[in-house]
Image 1: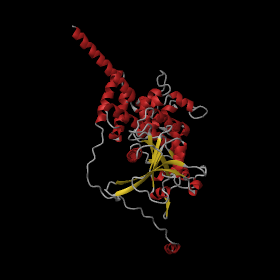
Image 2 (image 1 turned 30 degrees about the vertical axis):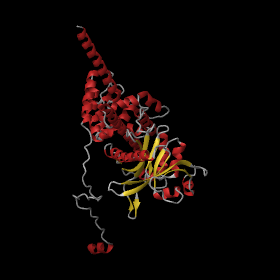
Image 3 (image 1 turned 60 degrees about the horizontal axis):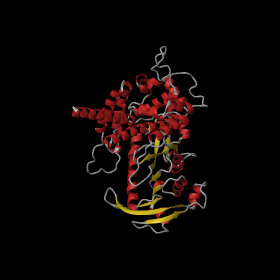
Length: 480
């Protein structure tokens, strides 16, 4: 009898433990909309809108709903205004609509005009604050690389094409060459991704061409204020310049930048550093550095280490790598940390392809900036779900396919919205984890790589022919 009681007590304890673990898991691994609601409560958005005239007209589309629908457009495969409005009619965001619970509430319209106007009225500053708030909320418990006591962020730049309009062409002048100007306005974007979690800080952007053109180094000065305090910063040779080393040191950010051979030779006293070099140096600015960055004092300098390695590339050829760093890691650990730099290439691919930031179909510069920052917010929501699933399954979150993870979230989003009990939500959670476990990237196979060539696309239509205007002489002959 005592043994039966003890057995029953053990079963109850095990059940309580399982329920506790499930509730903790539910708090970590939730749908994108639930994470958005947790990170961006309605009263915070109301505080951001204080003193601004936007959304002064009473209506169903409150700012929090509009921001979520813009994020949803980036998560949805279609991403149209119509898809967002229909999601509002049937999805979980309907609970946030003004008057949705009232008995006398009018049915919501399926037209897109009100939502389109609300997107335009949304202040850019509010969208930027929401993006920063989401990033900080999802980055509350950062993961560190082995041997480091702080997160490390990778810097990299890219370009985004914009739809052609007079306002965008003026703000972001198209590229030019010897044949003339291109049709598409071009925006330069700088991103900073966590080396482990792949979460992205709100990006910085500017024009590529024209009088207001900005460089990646110039944008990096602004993005440092959006990163966690005293986090590490890493970049390739484009960022291996004195201004970047000085700004990271002034911001109390340890840095690791790859150097060109010319710059490494200059820092080594005019002699190319040999392999296995690990030398303490003090980097002083050149006249060109001071001319390009007048805010840097002439007496400025940065203390750090100059490292050199001889490694084999993917083709088995030996090459030398040069670095400047203010980290205190051993040389081998420093080289291992820099090996994570390739992750940002796949992160940029996910941003451009899966969240569709390769081209922004907008008409105004302000709308382009809002779409960019909220597109990165949508990317972060998917990445957070992948990280939570990886922790629950004991897997590296980078083993998951980003597109499959995004499809999983979109599939389970309406199911979580319609769940009526905690037990049902827990069952959905376990089912979603099972789907996540089957969403891993395939194992790479060793096969010969193709040469980097341009494969032209077949032209299905004949090229347009422009009719030549008849000359005045021919016109006279025809008249005669």
